[in-house]
Image (cartoon, rainbow, N blue to C red; front, side, top):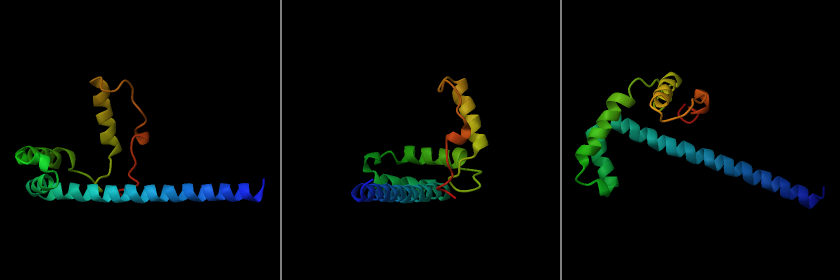
Length: 121
């Protein structure tokens, strides 16, 4: 293999590695922001609804619906998390059973293939 080909291969590998790290950084930043919003909803659903409508003006006049949705998540989705935003494999397995029973999915997948808690730990 010529020196030019080796250099090109090394450069390509370095670029791919850099892109991978950029993607990991961006995913971590997104998850951090999502968890911050989640915590805001858990702390004060009404204030979070007001903030949401300020950020998404298309929802102006529908603050009650937003608050209702946030209340729902605060009471039924978020409680019991050992780590904010972490997926509970047992809960996910039960959800998958429900989806299968209702015909939403045709077959089950290995639960460990469906999620990662890598970015919330």
